Length: 180
Image (cartoon, rainbow, N blue to C red; front, side):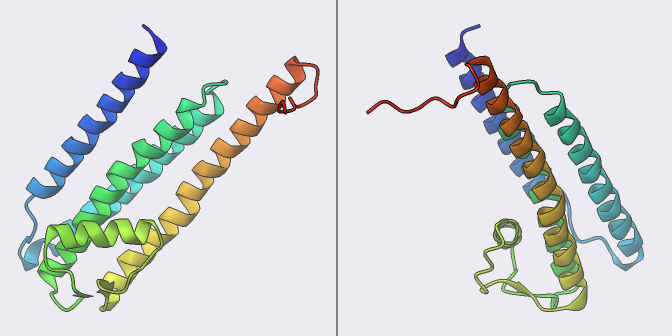
């Protein structure tokens, strides 16, 4: 398979995964009655545990990747889809059950927007956590984003440095100088 075709297939794969994640996100029923609140909390905890497991898999994948630079990007994308879906659904579920928990969050799209803005640590202020439960879940997302995704980026960066060092050692140890 040619390199170009391989890249096209990888892009197509990610587009299909993104489309599937959005389809899942917009079709999952939200708004369980009061007796099922414990179930919602348990499902959120299981979701976070699955994300941590995915991170461990991606870190291991990074460490054994060899010189393949595409693994770094694929690892990050593999994690972003479930992070956005899990936290988006959690925020929408909280707002459905406790309408005063967020200001400005009414629809699933608002929830998706808030999740992505929080992931980017931008925080425009138009949608924000107002209640304690919403703030606690937002804290979990921010900690997850900073610590876990930060750790994955650190592993990817160190892997990149190892690959660069190996290439420099293979070419006589000196970094290549750009030509004038």
